[in-house]
Every structure is written in structure tokens, then in C-alpha cells.
Image (tube, rainbow, N blue to C red; front, side, top):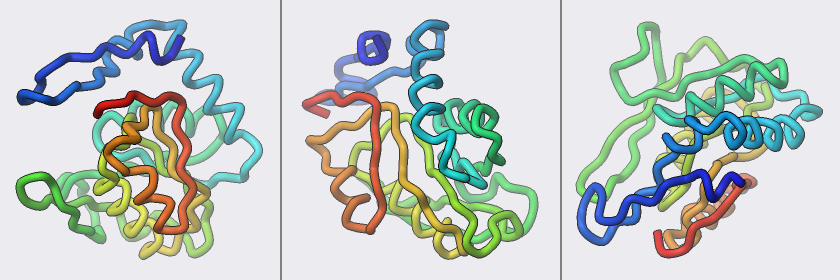
Length: 174
């Protein structure tokens, strides 16, 4: 049900890309409820202090999951969007670099953190999020994604950082 609720848009945002569009998933109450049921069941008994959602679509799943399991929600944002003191981590994009930030006064040393995003492709954003949470003193339970694009190697990249990687569905061919 989850995978079939995700729309694929061919040649977006450029030729050769198969964009996995989660707007159709979150617009479908039954499919979205199934995502949240499965994630809640997986993480409810893990004593997670923070669910860290990666901007922007990770906020959708992360905030709902944090509420369901009784954890706080921690936004991982692009540089310059958080109002208080932050720490920053750079990551590579196909054509350049970008940066992610979290507030410095949120995670306490040893807090258990779950990182959530809608999709993992190459793993660059997830790697930056992992580094941020660890620099802040957090212990990462694992990284969680609705979609994995295994051909692009992101899940393997996360695993090489000694971090578990879980996804609800996979699409071949990026």
C-alpha cells in the first residue's frame, strides 16, 4: 500500500531522474496512517528522546512520529533558518555544497536520537545529519526513511558510518 501510494514523475527535475513524489502518499489518509503505524510500532519501545527530521519532508514524518512515541521533535534545517545558536555541517550536492544546522542547546550528551527523512538517495544529507547529532552528543538509534533508492548507495554510506538504516520501501533505478 505504501509504495503504490508514491507517485513517480519521470524526467523531474531534469532528464533521466525518476522523482519519487510523497505528496500523493501524505494526501492518502490510509497510506499515511499505514506509514505512521509501521514506524510507531518499530520505535515505540526504544526510549527515543529526540526524533530529528531533516528539512523539509522529514518534518512531515518526524513530527508525527515524535508525537506518537512521546519524543521531542528536533528540526535539522538548512543553514540560516534556525533562530538561536547552532552548529553546522557541510555536505556535497551534485553541483556544489550545502549546509545543515541544529540548535546547540537541545540534545544532551547520550540522548537517543532517531533521524528521519522521506527518502535516501546518495546519503549526503543523512551523513551530515549523523555528524551533527553526534557532535551535539546524541546517540543515534538509526536513520529511518520512507523510501530507499538502493542503486544510489545512500543506505550503504549510512551503514559505513556505524549507523543503522531502515526504510519502508525501495525503488530501483533512482
